[in-house]
Image 1 (cartoon, rainbow, N blue to C red):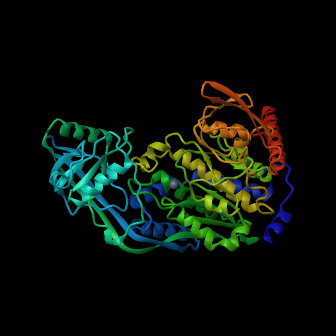
Image 2 (cartoon, helix red, strand yellow):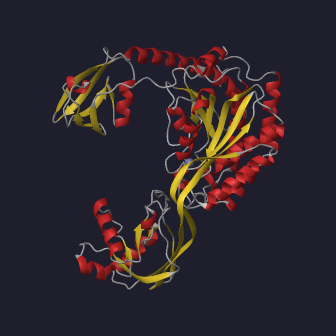
Length: 566
Ligand SMILES: [Zn+2]
């Protein structure tokens, strides 16, 4: 087994080992110098977002973006390849779209359509009608909506009723449906690629900016005659459409068949430019490759750059990669996934087994910029998440999503605001340095990243269904059942500490010793109960790992307090 070999190779590293010595140091220093004095990442991001703003999976826009990215790698003297991973039933091309009120007051409407939804056949003008409060039957509904733009009411309506109404509008020949966007003013693009080619003709559905929609609804409620016009240039391409990932190796000098993967997804929702989801990840990946080749660095093991598609619909590209490269996963030391926008990279997690190595690899990162601190956070397990590192984690490969600030990301994430102009380029330039130093550090190690005990121990479970901290159901023969918990109980405290949310409750349950004293509110009464995990076979592992992790954290804090640590 290759894992065994890797563990045997794994070096004993003291956390105090100076991070960079001799040749290693000069290579890292050169990466930083180039990344600071001659950064091209902004240029790359601008080119990508200006020339290839629409990168929906299975679109021509994405094909062109892959060709562009492959050319960037070739310019560096590397040899990229496109690897097919699967098909989508149809392709989708989003062209320009505009809409307006023709009368009573001529004004433009800001809106979006979802991906893989129909457009109009040129400009289509018609009267608007407001969704009725009481739905008329059969013919009356047909007379109301045929040839009209149907404006859905802004107030919430049950999903099922809404869907039935929209379907009826389509069946009765409405021109299209106008839904109201959220109060935040964000227009979020989504959609499902799972379309039946035969049924792809249909009416256009648009989501209109909250305030524009509210004015329309007011006018219609007031009895105004409102005429609208939309021209939505959405087109389907008959499928199946083959999808690809781009894979490009900077081949290692000593361990060419061992990999450090630097990756991002090239696809994106096509409502704006995909600048931060995920143009920034693509740009940093390309720039890291450029720094290595420009500096003439040949790493000990292979640094593999991967750009995925199909991320936004469900991590399809990375799942395909993990499936098709199964024989290499044991030799894949680490996966560094960049996908959360422009905010600077502020840390990475590490298990106890990984921690000393990570401290050493990331030591030079700490000195890059005092305004952008970086921390290696000790955790008791590596978990996946909603990006392309997750399929690797599931397969047992150390794979990481950088810790990044979320602030400002909601404003751009899948919205009309995800444009180049919103990007903080200084943060992105900094991220390039972090990723380059990490890739270099991991590629130069004597062994692979230590993946022992990579998963957290199985958490303590109660055996209940919860809504917040309220018990909505108790599984028979569970610990909660044995402790006499009932449906309707509300959890107040765990070991004396108040818990205000489900998250706080499940977290408190994992802390401390195996005997949990839990107070419940039952009607007017307070009931004291105990959930005892002492007989849980997993408990010994949990305790031992928790204690070791706590010790690690205390040591780290002590070093920081002494001013000698990071
Ligand atoms: Zn993303």
